[in-house]
Length: 256
Length: 261
Image 1: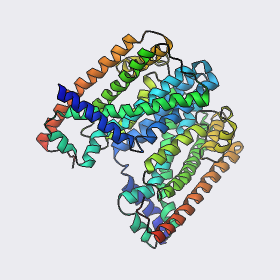
Image 2 (image 1 turned 90 degrees about the vertical axis):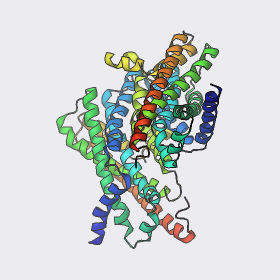
Image 3 (image 1 turned 90 degrees about the horizontal axis):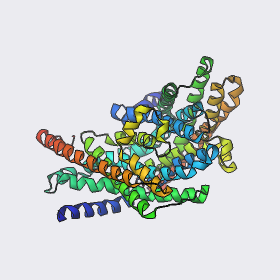
Image 4 (image 1 turned 120 degrees about the horizontal axis):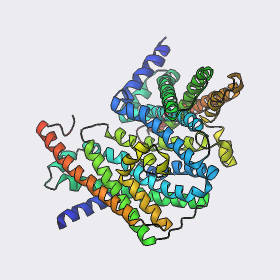
């Protein structure tokens, strides 16, 4: 148990350091969501200025998902390029314990984007972020980040057999922004969309962040967010074991 | 004759060889599905923010998405060659540079046109906008000119590829600037004055405005000025890009810095 926790912790720290030094994941991870946040701020300011605080919180969490979706999709392919995938798979440690901190580190990098988006909104658009329950807010943010990282883990292992997994991960950026209620209330969507939203941890994480900021009751949302994250991890562990066994049996891990 | 062959055949081969976009695993998510979701995202934000009509966002984002195939592809004309270790070979050839580089832009423009047109048709159908049938040919021409203008800008970002290694970051930033500044989602009147002024020199701004007016029933003649402005913007960016590429190519030969980036 201690060894597993150490592996998770060190893996997370190591990958956060690596990602911080990448201009694509670091600089672009901050700047790219800011473009979308800026557009959203202009749109809300022009039509519904009362909702700017709502938009500010939503836009800030968009960055966490943006930092995760494409990068997590490509996580295994990146190891292939580096020539380290076979080594990691052959290592005595469970491969899930190696991959999970990678995707959580990707989501963690999104915190830079989250902070910069809130700051951007405050400085350029005068959006005051007033938080009612600081303690719950400070719990909701990391819980959402970890849950998004766990969703990224599920993506990463689901795309293990695709060379162009980055494109599939990239594809999921807009849909999750759209249906998780970051910038659009779920009530605006057709009824058939809502169950899909409810199955996504970012939806509940976003609600928990908003509830804690606005003085509501974020704990139920927080628990569902964490629960879904753990469910993704459990499915991911089951899937990765299955995929790795199949890949070893057919000698197709490197996809050459 | 060899220049014509270089222009058409060289451009097509380069497009196919460098980008690997014939793989449906990249083409469909990137060019078919993503623009539809971008349209839906902004349509719904627009509904929540109660600003513009659905038509405003469908046209704005469909045309703006032409920036993805056009800017990224043109930027890759340099970055892709370096990645394949063929950049020095390409620049060492005696081939004329105009057909060499401009020829590569032709398939990019065609691709950008189809991506934006598809997004416009499917996105429009999904959210239920109606455009007069007589406006369709005009809008198609506007999309083509807009794709040309974006490719012109892409040639400039391609030139930067001779200086910088991480062109993917640069292309994404250019895409973001076009998203914010060109009126794709925010009416130019709602932007600060300096932003709407700057937008006049960017691709997409005039094209998006022309397409919106055509969809609202304006005659093609009435948007001729906007169309000419869009083409001029593309031409200027293209010339800036071509001139910069030539200048940096000379510099890289003199200082042996071609592979430096």
